[in-house]
Image (cartoon, rainbow, N blue to C red; front, side, top):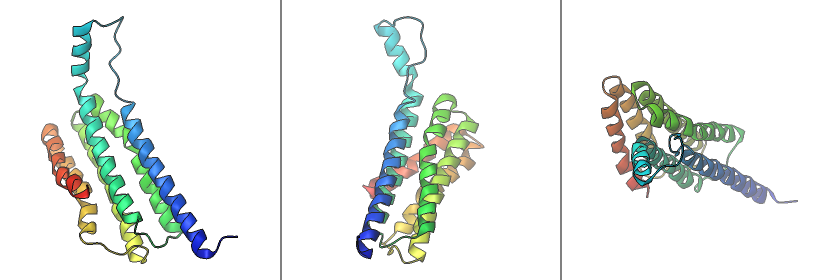
Length: 193
């Protein structure tokens, strides 16, 4: 029978492996939306080139979501690598976060298909909610002493949801401008690297 520290380490490893798997599956599911529109018959070179070019909103949505999910994973990995313990509540909070991450392919598909104000707001609020859940998991782990604070990690965990909440407000006025505000996450992505 394993000792208590071994059992705790095994439980923590299982929590991390499961979390990593959900992030990996969510990122993989993003690529499933990358399909050519249904065409009748075979496409010649120019028709195929035009169809590939017409799918640019799907490529862009994929890239944005891939980077955002990657940013969430990077933060989760960085924080949970310093995790010194956990309880049942932290497991459930983490599970809620993972549910949000697994949901991201759906708003991504909506955004790539419609790209209008409603799709932009839905996407932005979905990403902000996942970012809020991520910050909540982090705050809970810190508050109970399972995770020691590290520099500006708290500010970074609020950066992504802040950018996407801002973009949801901007989308009420202009959906294209709202999407441009997502570029404000680039410094966060570069800092996480």
